[in-house]
Image 1 (cartoon, rainbow, N blue to C red):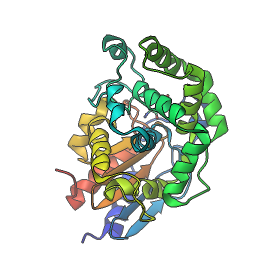
Image 2 (cartoon, rainbow, N blue to C red; image 1 turned 90 degrees about the vertical axis):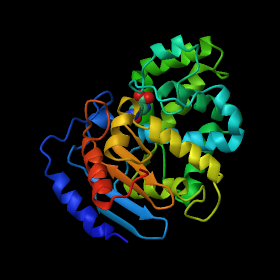
Image 3 (cartoon, protein in one colour; image 1 turned 90 degrees about the horizontal axis):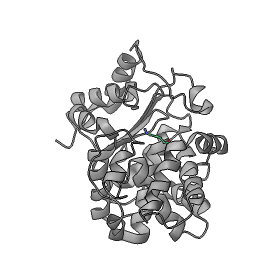
Length: 304
Ligand code: DON
């Protein structure tokens, strides 16, 4: 058993010294104002070890990481029928790219790019009685943590800057791949992206994906096969046009968000979350990628 505490402290110290920390997202003030020096890591193993370092307890905007949780809830509710409306191929394009969607007749490449996540949001709006509150409760119930919440300011800023998301939703609607009104689906989507969690909370919520679908509270949230499917999609599509690079450098299924968070996991072994808000040119956390690359290299723990 590796000494994760020593390994992570060592990586944290080394990576903290990086001069070029990337740049924080500037498209909304709530992200532009975040201090680039925030840096946290939290790890939990399926056999009960857990360890946090730095700003691992500070909540941040989980943004696109929420797409995995929305997908998980949609799989629980409607199962395999999702795949009639969304594909499972990497896009090789930025998260908000649009032209492929038109060429491919309104079927998004995968559920982790924006157009795919908007279809998943549409499924949840159709299937849940009070979509926003029910989804928030779903996320809270996974670990029993009722402090997890939306950030209404972030949701509003997303709405007033979300031109490409409106374009994607309208394009989906034109191809009959959106059943609810654009405004309603995007209101849900902007709220899901606005959820805030710390590294520790995210690690704990994502635990079920490393633990054959069973959450920390020992309740089944998905079947083992469904967890496998989500992990496969994270591995191939979790980092947009940097998914290949992440698999190459890190070798784990994972998901990034424009708030600077990354969750990655090794099935049956561990979940690790990093938060460092400076992003690289592809929109993924610069220090987060360095941390995870160093972690899987030092521990030799990856899916490959
Ligand atoms: O849809 C958007 O623009 C954002 N709310 C989510 C973006 C995001 O996190 C992209 N990924 N890194």
